[in-house]
Image 1 (tube, each protein chain N blue to C red):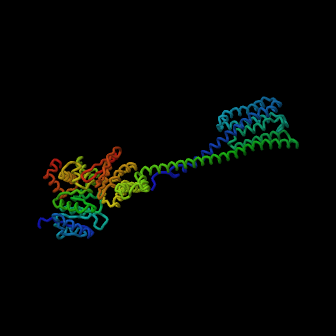
Image 2 (tube, rainbow over the protein chains, first blue to last red):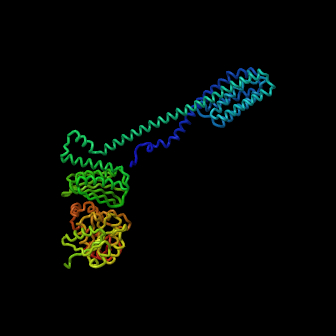
Length: 381
Length: 216
């Protein structure tokens, strides 16, 4: 029965919910990664000069080792271009950077004196791990592979130096464990943060949607009330007058107003019915009320149906409602649809004149002897 | 009583046949119903074959209108008033095209039926308000060109059901209203099928000065 109005279907929210949620979670992901990368950038920027620089400058000054020390610093600088703008690192930068720091690590490990791996002079192992984290934070499988490669690379160098003694094994184990667990801890933390952020974003979006829905529903209800109040026309003041005892139900004027209100209401109820020819349906509803009042009405409809918008139907039937509610005994109602016009006319034994109106619907009325004629015309083209 | 008008009523409802016979006989002057029956045979056989006017219901028991019977009656020169339950514009226009002198719906009362029968007996068309509405709302391609005044008369007659009212509204005499309606029907007759009744109708219109020979 309802053609338009409220409800979630009409608001178009439910259909877009899946996409909205996905968008929200992507946004949360971007936010979390951007913040973490900023922290990691600071970490690499601080760790390299403060922790790794000491062992490096104290150690050998092989030219290849210098290059190996410069490469991670350059990679950090390059990453800063995207990270400070809170942008994700492009794949070529991430992949190229990872390969570069791994190669630098290999070169640094090569340049280390024997039995110095995992020792105080090994400046590269811990440092390169942080770089890998910065580069591949949002690509976990690649990160884990790179970390594993780094570990294998260093362990291989360490083993190639000769069979380590128990103290060396213990030392290497402690260093590897502490570095790896700290760095993997960051990965785990990023995942946890990410999940929480996604949930928070989802809840916030859902709240926002619920608020929008509620606001729209309120608006729709208000429009409906305003619309009904507007279309109820004479009904509300009439009912108020009757309830307050200001109007006498036996008075002719009150009865005429009641007849008008009844016709207006009946037409209003017919307006939302789903019928093939709404205009005829509404005209017939008005005629029906007049007939129940004892007026003999002859209704004639001619011409093929044409679509008539709701507001035009209202304007076409409004004078009909007035004329019919004023009719005493007889009325002729006609609806004619010609090639370019829709015409609703009433000839009734009513004493009232409707006056004229211009606009999309022209209303003309006049008195001829005992009869009053009213016609509402709407040009279809 | 030789010049008393006679009619035959073809309708599948006995109450309608009796009612029509009563209405016609109580007019002034009265029209005698010489035969009546539930199918079209009563218009071809016995006294019904010589009746001046055939009052024909379009739906004789079956779901399809008896347009074939209407065509045969018209081709035989019979003057037919179609009297139908259905207020369907297309059927009404189709009946006019086949040569019926009037299409009247059963919602329209005794007055129109008596006038239509009397006009038909003289070979004249009669246009009741519902038929005027059908003609005014006619959007077919082959419809005749009507003057603005003629359209006004059609619409006003459809809207008010009162020729006096139309005359008063348009500031013309009652006979001018009738002339307009008759001329409209002649225009429709000129575009319809050939039939003896139509030829007579057009000839009479020329004779009455409603149309000129040039209009043909």
